[in-house]
Image (cartoon, rainbow, N blue to C red; front, side, top):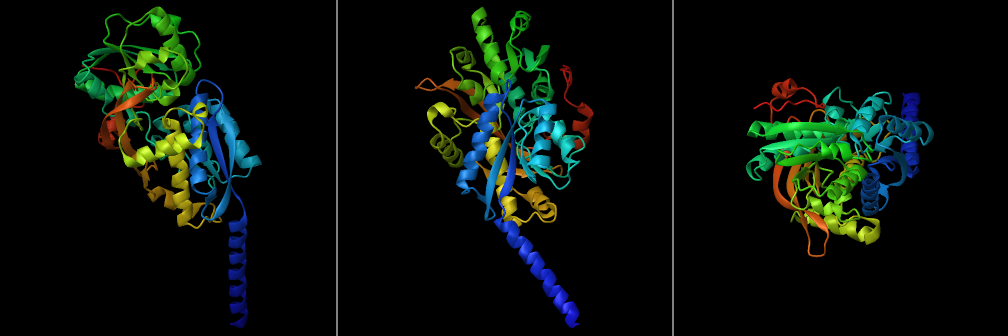
Length: 416
């Protein structure tokens, strides 16, 4: 018995020593962001969101000093895979925040399954499939997807704006498909018609033929573009003297575009859009987040208001910090306890309450807004209304949502 007691004491001492050593060890957190290509401005703001959250936490999580290891992607799945492998194999991280772009997220869902001890919290990527199709047990998404960000917008533009027939221009990859999917489900059910869909490669420079091909008989054009593509389109459309009304995808009318240089962005004034954030939401938590963001960086190093990307990365860090605090920063079990805590973590975030569903995916608030000009000349998203607690199935039953099929260039159809 004495030998057994001594062995037990020794084992406990080893565990305590290991825990103490881990407490002293710096916690390495990989941060993946698109820092080249058309979505660079969003990636840069996502990094700002993480940096603010880390500073507010005193650069510690669960008492452990943290080191942010930032790696660049270009919005392609291959670049995301290279970045993740570097973080895991070379930098030896056990935690990753990211990625930013839709198809990157799908790639990271699959990669995360090959490294089961890795805990990955999505940065801002919004493709539906990432958490809906074959979800990964160690991939968590505390932001809505692109379809959820469109909840209520289709009905709003049909009933309140009177847009009965529209055309679509979007980038040719998973996130814009998801946005149009979410928009069309509401818009077409309300009675709207989508007369045309044009898809362009991410990083398109010349929109001449696309602009020339916009039908004359539509009430508005839905723009599912982002970053540099959005700015290029607006510049070139403005040069044609076109007078079309627009409906904005979530990152078309985001601060990544509204804060861009040049006058062409003013073509968006009056544009209805929807997203996971609203610049002019009169909520104390949101206003505090805006002030923290503005105070953290000089005006020429940030946007007028935190973008969707900054907010989502900020929330991702805070979700990790909360769950790590619950497990006292202990990752010695391969992150099993942390994954269990993350799955039940709820955020009282600046953009509303967030909780996860069974696929570790966010149920959250959608904001319907319209682009407006402030007295100082800045463009902003004027708050119209919220659509609270939007699930990934957009209020449909699981079977009905599955029957619609996955987002694509042509799905869903717009049947009257």
